[in-house]
Image (tube, rainbow, N blue to C red; front, side, top):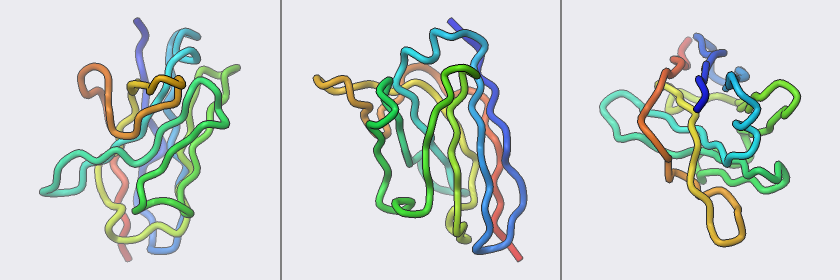
Length: 126
């Protein structure tokens, strides 16, 4: 078991950037596939990106493809989500957590494992 701390949210203008961090308390985090999720106001949770144990294997939802980049730093037990060209519709509460994997060990987008934890608020506005 480990604790996860999500940070990096804030208020940004359209077209701006933010980098979210998902830091874990134990290195076992590095042996898990990790996903980013968000919940926009009045909407369901949405899986937007995931990264496999092999960091070259990543997946993105169509809504963020080409604008968001997921990465991991195993030395820091941390997964990042670089968000560029943010739009109003990116506003929401962002979470990270372990996700399931397929038979090739690649992460499954949107298939979380375990309960929701702490999130960080991202607000895109002028």
